Length: 166
Image 1: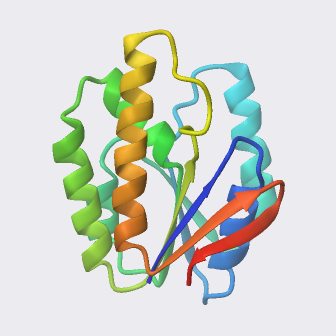
Image 2 (image 1 turned 180 degrees about the horizontal axis):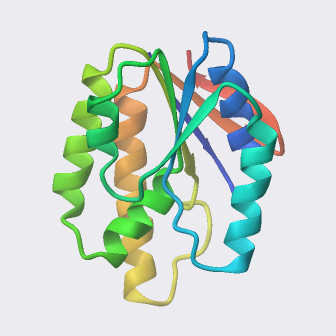
């Protein structure tokens, strides 16, 4: 089952997704896409790790999500988060379509439960620079594709889950 969880920054989406994964038997994989590039991100990562507790195996992978998904046969994977992954792809000048196609293919062939977390970025103003506009556009396209293949889709707002697709 593919469960897509979307929400704004600090909406509670990661905590919600972690709780959803824990309804399934351990072990659980936490596939972290963040690159630790400063002290603030290091602190955020530490908070997430502490909150998860026992039963989680963390895999840090900023680009090759499809490879990790294709080579794991655990029951449940949590990917957090797609917008950080997309940022990594853009910063590394990767082929976005090729990478997202590989990722979406891996999702549809995975035989367990997979929960995908992402930031909703399309409900704000249009950015004033080309890279930010490209990011917003690519995120919107990716989110639409995720919503289309997801068996379940939840939007998290202020810590409250809103079921969009059940």
